[in-house]
Length: 279
Length: 243
Image (cartoon, rainbow over all chains, first blue to last red; front, side):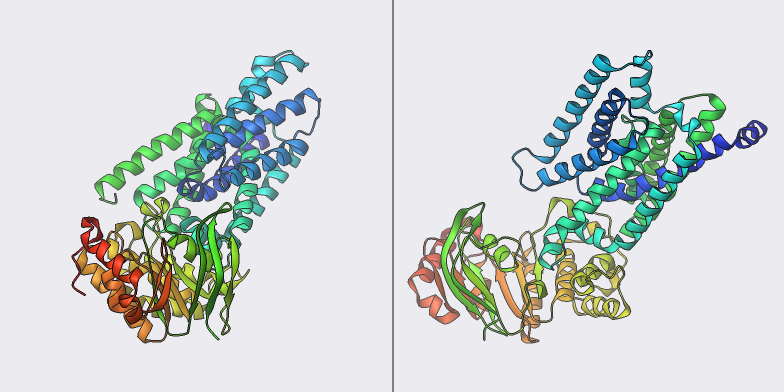
């Protein structure tokens, strides 16, 4: 088995897939803690469906570099979603549900009507559940992913204390003169970037798993914000690594295997938390 | 000049006024208690004072070198905080955020300030404990220490004793009173009129009747008498009055 793995690792595309997988897992877990605590667990889901919708527009327009419109489109949706949270004619969760299914339906409609592809259901399926396209990444795509991940990590570290303050007590932060809206906007933009990155890996239906499982698992065991954040990053990277390895050895779909690894590890963490009496 | 001067102030949400024509002053060293019926706009008023919402009409002036960001505010609990994984230290330190501007990390001065305020609130031994595992009284001390990190001059407390048992409530009042004697100006919302008149030196009553003045004048005023009587009859208002 080790031999097979070593053989696989000899191929550059496998190494690329591994690197991208680990980077995405790291980024998505960092903001996961904040999103779960702010009761925005489903924003990942909503935004990824928006990204799916925008991607189908790109497909219909026959754009080769879909990133050009997918990234701005998703960021726009993220900003809109977090804004509705504030002046709530339609409450946060309802707004997310609305945009999420709306974009999904609209995207499929577009693809079905206008797509020139011969393998429509294959296209849709790979966008929703992630594809083997992670194994066909080019060097420039890997580089782009690395740059964006680095930006996400740096932004997170620089604003770690502000993000904590805004997550724990928005009211107090605002009263102390912290620019809460600006930081919420920052969080929205960063999460949109992460989701667009993660679409390649697990597809738009499973992204939420990458965001929430690491956070929930580490919240079972750890009790301070810092330890929860660090552990969820470690957790996510380990699960992504083993998920990819298992998917290669067993020939299973990459995205769902990673999520399955996340779920299994969540179970273990829950047990540990239960028996150590953390909760 | 007073720290806060409210002139013909009307407060409310989304253009809807809940309390209007308020005139009062908070001087340095004062202990002001804001009392009134449920829904009379007490919380809305203090949110206006800490600039969370804009006044509907009138104005709030800040004097004596007090900047709105320098008020230590203790808001009511939120749902998010109930299961939040954070240590006491992390939370108290977050009170220093107004001092740091865009600087990303806390410096040693801020860490010392946080440690001093934890000492003051007698929660130093809880520093690495998880916030959600503390008792209600301990949680309030943590939030009070955080508010102290944000201010040297003034604390605004929104019902700091709600949900606490009588013993812890009394401790909390003593603690706030001690801070006041150390020179920090206190503005507190209270449901509990008995303690309000026991500790405060000024009373602002809002609701159907509006009253602002010193404690002794309030007890003799019409608004004060009616309100005290109502509270003593109301079984939900806590212990019977003996003042």
